[in-house]
Amino acid sequence: MSPSRLDTDLRDRLHALDRAGLLRDTPTLSHPEPPFANRNGRRVLVFCSNDYLGLAAHPELRAALAAPTAELGATASRLIAGTRPAHHALEARLAAFVEQPAALLFSTGYAANVGALSALIGAEDVAFSDRLNHASVIDGLRLARGATHVYAHADPDDLERLLRRHRGTGAAWIVTDAVFSMDGDLAPLTELRRLADRYGAYLYVDEAHALGVLGAGRGLAIDEDARADVVVGTLGKAFGVAGAFVAGPRSLRTYLENRARSYVFSTAPPLPLLAATDRALDLVRDASQRRARLRRLADQLRAGLRQQGHDVRMDPTPIVPLPVGAPEQAMALERALLERGLYARGIRPPTVPPGTSRLRLVPTAAHRSAHVEALLSAIRDAHEAP
Ligand SMILES: *Cc1c(COP(=O)(O)O)cnc(C)c1O
Image 1 (cartoon, rainbow, N blue to C red):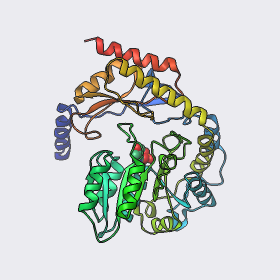
Image 2 (cartoon, rainbow, N blue to C red; image 1 turned 180 degrees about the vertical axis):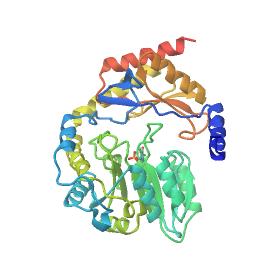
Image 3 (tube, rainbow, N blue to C red; image 1 turned 90 degrees about the vertical axis):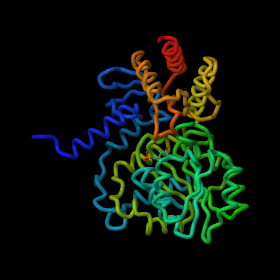
Image 4 (cartoon, rainbow, N blue to C red; image 1 turned 30 degrees about the vertical axis):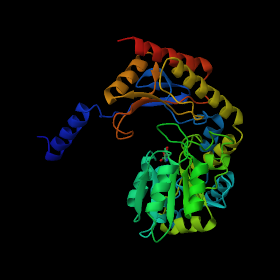
């Protein structure tokens, strides 16, 4: 059979991506004993998982997931026949954890942001969004009917300039990640809250990389006493499971139940997943030692990279971007580390802006100081070798 027109067309597009150094692949891992994994058949030390607390393979989570439940699939969307007492119980616990009155579960963080933002920001409303917000936030704002104005990254002055200039007839929303997923820096939540109060705006905070990780683990908004109006938490990173929730006033929960299309038109999370997440919440709450170790390892990695002369900031998060520049160089460094038995991912456009390709290094609580040392010497070797 001759290749179809579609096949030819797509091959052309893939060649173009490849020529630009932007073609992506999907390595296959098994990772039951972090921080080591088997990657495409080779044992590697992993520095690119978001399993910050090292819980994804925790025996208690595996036991909770494997424990017999009367049902497996929820059989329908939440509004039809998919809601069980366990959904309500977990939502109540998650809401209390982030100190909000109510929460609503979504199947993923992507679905949570797309569903919540598109439902909340109506035609009369305006949104103000950090330039480096996560793709799911960007997509949610694209789907929303109101206009979006993008402010310079973590820059309250630029945000204020836009807030002054664009006063809609409806509500104003300031939308930000708490920890930026590819840069590992923090949103200036205290200043954003102050601006929200001054301009009568709402503050929407995506805590994906802060929840379980920073401070007491309950999110940056709580650590900084910044009173988020809407909080998004994800359950696939520090929680080691999958899913997400949106928390805020009770009316927010009810409104999203009515209006968030990624909630309304999607099958409810399965029962064993709820059991595992419930257990994960206990582990995350009690993980202050894991959080402290994670912080020490991240500090060690940042300090070591700076000693080698790399332009790395001392942020308090486990996401450590090593700037490289061109996509091909990021992938060459990824390969050089792989040859030395270490796996960290090169990050290229469109995930990051052009010219800012990088290696995104992530220690977890499953690592030890010696693992970070091994990473640092592999990076030094890779830079010295031609
Ligand atoms: C990972 C991430 C998401 C998406 O969460 P998933 O559960 O993986 O879909 C949303 N927001 C931010 C900031 C993230 O880093």
